[in-house]
Length: 122
Image 1: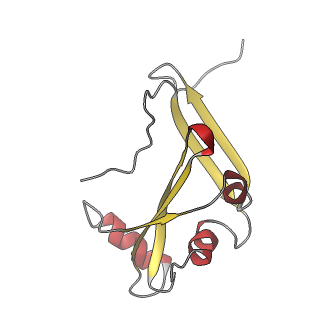
Image 2 (image 1 turned 90 degrees about the vertical axis):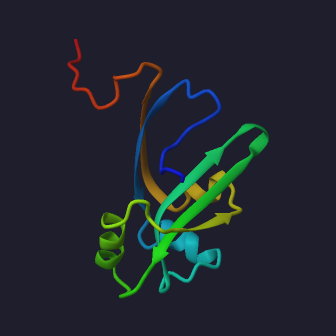
């Protein structure tokens, strides 16, 4: 069984990420442009791995879209553990991937326990 968690070889720095999609050009657009029929398979997650020597691997994970809406897909995710997904590997450059997003914020730390904590600037 796999888990929706990021990781690298050493995991020296860990954190979280928040992204705003370009209007109608985000994850669904990437999936559609790469042969995913989003009327059948609803994209729920992706895993983007960027490695040495310009290596890029993008995997998009989808769930069956029974009623063609977000709520049905969300209900399927909420009521299944593990979630039954399809995985689609997509060949895309880093530049092309980031064209689909207008804002990206990454927060990370090499120290466990920092991410998610409140802080005061002194």
